[in-house]
Image (cartoon, rainbow, N blue to C red; front, side, top):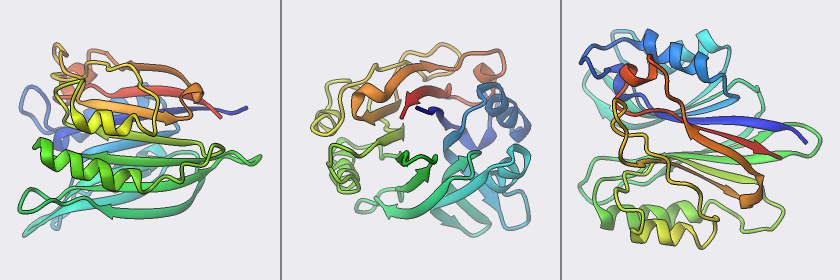
Length: 230
């Protein structure tokens, strides 16, 4: 059975703890992790140049899916998915925007690793209000088939400060609970804002934060890294 390495990382527009923007440090962290698939949040591009997701994809030799959530006068901003496995067979962009709050979204992708091993990956960045997250979780769960044979991963920055919050309880109707690994703030992580779940739970073999001198400064979040066995 293939073992797949996944990572979720809020890159904070490549602005580090030192308040300096440096996409090169984000690239360095991704190379340290050496994952097959990366879910990125707060990825920025400018109309005048500097598309971070496209640049990272070129440097990593990966396929990229942009999940823009916020259009601005000078560019765009949102989620991104990088797949170094070159195995994307289907994609869907999901609008999770809620009322007048900041637009939010998710990227859903089916990845075919051969031998009948297909993995659904949903990457997201949820809102800041509890009521907002509750509705967003309801929409996310509609992306999954609930078939026993489905292999699926949900990962991203869920912005849930409380481990007993109602959005997480709703997610656990489909996903088995997974460890809440502190990833924020990166200098001394206390809160498990970045989360990852698998269906079934038995395919998850390892889940941890990626801690290195570079990851502690490159963004205000640490990356969350998982190994799964299909």
